[in-house]
Image (cartoon, rainbow, N blue to C red; front, side, top):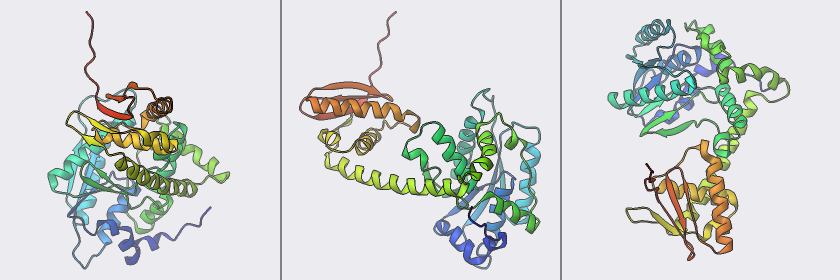
Length: 341
């Protein structure tokens, strides 16, 4: 296992400048702070960043999911800690009924919806979350278990667009243990969420497996390194697919997208898969990673039809995909299905 750096080195001026480099051009920053050690450390590190020079305005936000009786008190605790550092704070609440199944996924969707809405209301250009190397490792394992493709195995991105707001995870390469030690060394108070030990949740069960996996060499650091390497390969494949997609002369006519289909047959399957994905996206009919198997099946059928010189008509994710015998591929919204009485 890689030796962990001393916690104090994380808060040095040079380290903070590197850590927060993606924020140099930010207008205003919204920071999601739950009250746990990771996000509390992030808030304090931001307070130490460029203390004597102008920096972007920072707003702290806590999402109260209304799932535990203690959550309102925890949000109030974060508000007090933020105020002690000179940061304004907002509490965002997830109101309404909660699902009995898929609770963590629903809570995640609600959390980002509330945070993005808050960012827009407050004029923030960037959203910061305190995801760590351990979170990345757990994410990769969970996606492997689901049979994810390369995009999923690339894990969480350090920097990505989220509905027009730049979402940055500056601590993604930092082990959780370092942040916990930093909080204890500096005397930064934090709260402990009991749901982080509840084996009802998939992520918690994977978390409890991590020590056994690390003993066999599959450490959080190596899983995170795998994610970085996959992300590099993913970017290269996407760039190549984009180049070929543009060579296919895609044309939108207001009703759909039309392009030369021969490239789907000429390229390796992984590239053809991405060309089709980009075509669907350009037509406004993209699909999420959970439907990768559908996209793979569609690509295989198109390649077979092209090889045989025959036409094909199929649907995927609300899109009607048609291949004519002349080798033109058309993608448009699937028409409403007729229903009998």
